[in-house]
Length: 290
Ligand SMILES: C[S@@+](CC[C@H](N)C(=O)[O-])C[C@H]1O[C@@H](n2cnc3c(N)ncnc32)[C@H](O)[C@@H]1O
Image 1 (tube, helix red, strand yellow):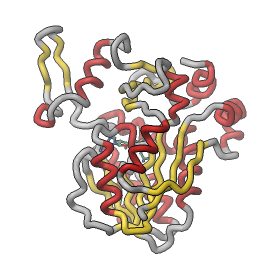
Image 2: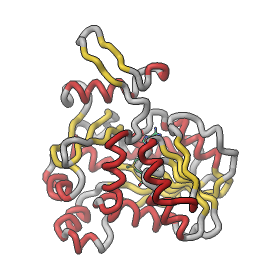
Image 3: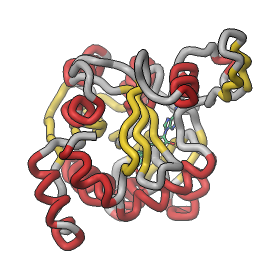
Image 4: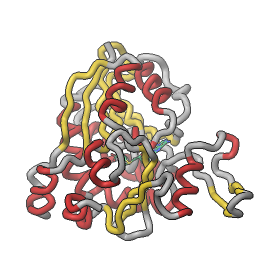
């Protein structure tokens, strides 16, 4: 772990460090889970797979949504965690701006924090989420103020009509998906012409300094949480890849923000505040469908 990460991650996010998953990467069980999670054919997803060469039994996740206790952990963490509460949400909500009267899709809504904020500002919101645990948390948070549907975002959004949304928020989800081009084409399709997309992901420089190797690496990585029991798996990407994939489906880029914490983090930790103002952690983009 870099000094930068070590300085603030212990406050809420990661403790036992990062695991780079790939040749020469992390522990075998992580290597198995992550490599297989994005390589197996769909009919094997969610099943136990026997690997004759190693003799290891591997459970393949059906997608990289936060299932089981990972979901409960994230739901609790998202309330007050540094990245979610103090960096990502204030930045992306400011980029979204006024949503009064708008129909908004929250793609990968987690425990419903964005949906709740948008509904409060007068939007009508549909949340899609791959984890049944987080769907339950989101429904508990939102009640009848917004609809939440369980859906794997690596599959088409067939239930949604063309041009049926004014805006889409997709916060900290893109890097978990295995078929980003299809997902982005679907977001483009369901947005009306002129509609906005507000999207956040990990900052490539954070991934580079935290996991090492080449800046241009596209490997799947595992970030182990402070408690050592939970982790998030995602694909690191360069800036060129993130922006290039968005532009190639037809989106127009309006704004790029290298997210920094809001003032309220000072009350919790001046050290984390200062560190996150020096070292990038997350990236936020606003685009639109022309
Ligand atoms: C870091 S959380 C962000 C949640 C929410 N957008 C927020 O900012 O509070 C990432 C979310 O992506 C969801 N996710 C990951 N892969 C997914 C998939 N294939 N389909 C649907 N949701 C997925 C996870 O379950 C989790 O809720």
